[in-house]
Image 1 (tube, rainbow, N blue to C red):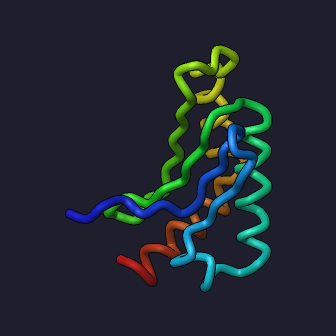
Image 2: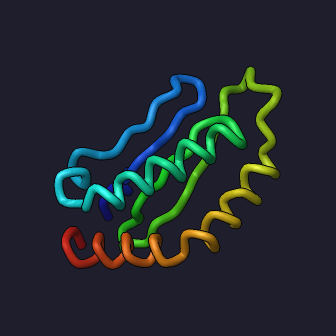
Image 3: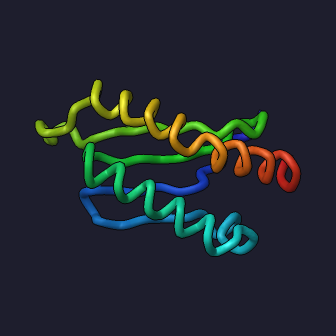
Length: 105
């Protein structure tokens, strides 16, 4: 069993977007821009930190956390937004999972 691989992350606290260099080198620019846009929009809307990771099977999942002192962070709203994003970006997510399963599994 290996450790899950972070694809990208965005933080409202640091106002930064991170993409794992392992994937940044091979992903098309348009995909990287789309990941950045959806991640930054998510954290601007909900707050906290959004992380997108691949599990061992190559499934892409979203996780969100917030600082303990962040009283404006809405945990329920964050989960609802993730469900909304999974539907809205379904094709992108499926393409990323296929990419990961093809080149990294």
